[in-house]
Amino acid sequence: MVITFPGNPADLFDWLMEQPQDTVLSLLAFGAAHSVNAVEKKFTERKKGIEQANQLGHALKVHMPDWFETTGDSYFKHVNRTTIELAVAEAKGSEAELSVRAAAKKSEAVAIADRIVAGSGWLPFPVRLASPEVGPEIEAGRNPDDSQFPEAAE
Image 1 (spheres, rainbow, N blue to C red):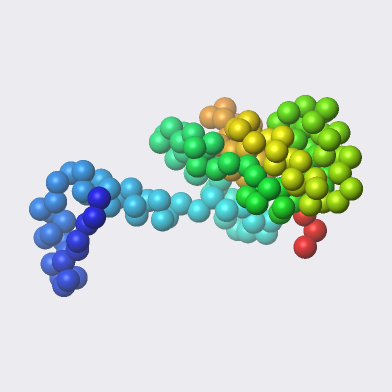
Image 2: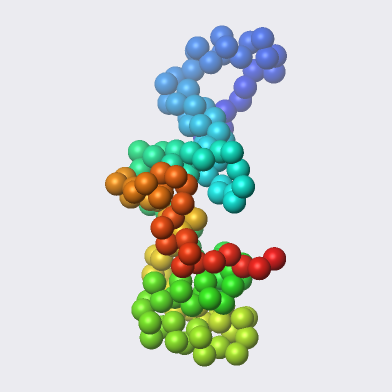
């Protein structure tokens, strides 16, 4: 849908009042999408971003595997080897984890994990929607499994 706004800002409100409901709703959705920030940072005053994003994701019935696929480029290259091993174990089991662990270099571990996890629909915690019945750890902005997936060293 292509929307052409009036050139003069003073005409915007009158123009908006003349638009069909689907156009107005599309504009509202666009504005809402740009106001949601679900980025987690270690040190922040903003504690409810993830909770709000999860609520919105559930209300919109977002199926995250339609929007994100875990690959070497999208995830495994950006985390440490332990995290790669734990991710593969969670996605495909301990035997698959051993394949990653046997890799001599991280680049090999990334390639193996990419191949093993491909098509599984497995998602890393930062892009998962929390279940509606979240516990107090999630409400506090912490994943109870966070210790399982350490961040990569800078």
